[in-house]
Image (tube, rainbow, N blue to C red; front, top):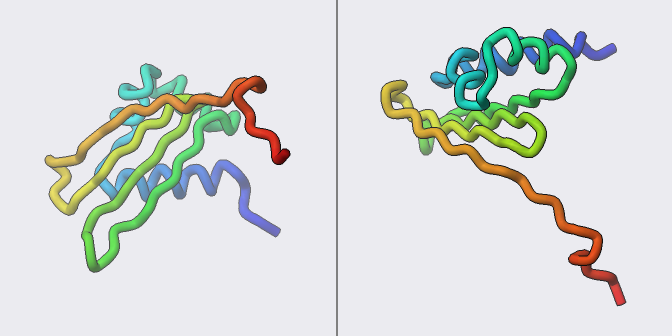
Length: 101
């Protein structure tokens, strides 16, 4: 049996914090209060992915997604030099889809 979804989420938040990104920072950059962030997280609306640093590059990447908004944090070993970027995902309209013919 797999773990409870909230425990998986808590693990992701812990890994993000270890990489240098706090809940306060993630919430603020997504335009949410901390309470809203936790509420949406509990509902499964916010997704967090952490790519751990490797020996080769020493850089972690934290990606937090809320709907079509993505917060990407590139976290080098020095926590003072974390770089943040917000991206908005776009879906193609049905008229823009390419058919296989």
